[in-house]
Length: 153
Image 1: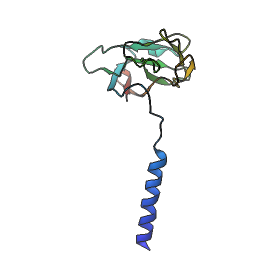
Image 2: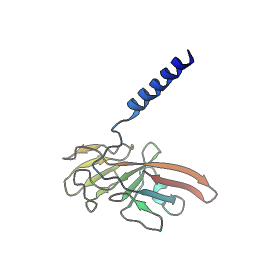
Image 3: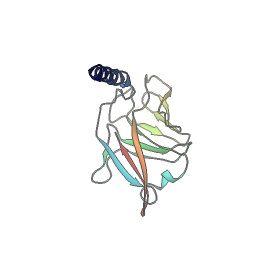
């Protein structure tokens, strides 16, 4: 009886693992190291305003790792932080970057694709791109020095 239960449990775990894997993290943008940490009270004050964003096209300080084409961080319209790779998924070239704007969008000036940033989806709104921007994880924590955001992959 115990052996049968163990086999059922192992089978259930295997099924869960198989069905939990998805293509959600698949992107034409190559995997790259991502690590960016900023204090929004002193180092990234643009991120204190809803809809505010800041682009990091290249590392600014020692320890920064800004993905394939750079990172854009936005304080979304729903008061959440989001981060995306600046490389256009249609062009897949680290030198061709999308340009964020005050409407909560990012535009590739090369192919014309427009992406949604304001609510954290990164989805393509128009243009030839077949996928959205590569999204990164953002964690937020409070310290005595202020609010810190950390972007990782």
